[in-house]
Image 1 (tube, rainbow, N blue to C red):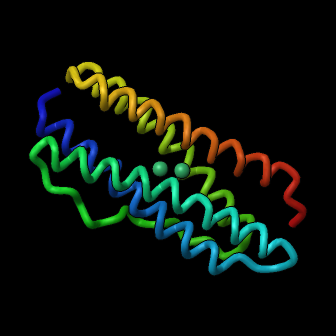
Image 2 (image 1 turned 90 degrees about the vertical axis):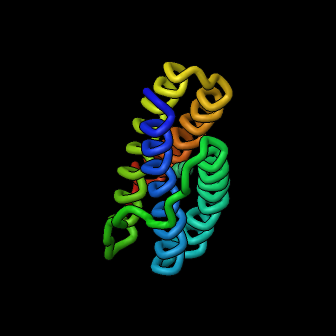
Length: 141
Ligand SMILES: [Fe+2]
Ligand SMILES: [Fe+2]
């Protein structure tokens, strides 16, 4: 794994974080029904974490001599509260898988600081996924 390959993969992850920010902002606006206040607040709380991840990645990409992407990935369209929660759960599980892999790659590259940071992000995304899964577990509609 050379510097260019690592930077490209971190840019893929940054695009994922940019999507997550937009996804949560949009879903917070779209949440409806009696659970709208809690759901909207839950989605907005996630934005802060994803923004911190995006900020870290953009800085790291520049530190490695790369150019941070400004293009998010495609965001899953979701019409109902349940569809939004399911789309969020899928995205968070994907983030856990991506950062687990990326932490290993950072270790192979020889950047222990990056590997540790990426492992912290695995923990954050795991918490997001677990919270979402627990909300969905008894979702009434
Ligand atoms: Fe994130
Ligand atoms: Fe997340």
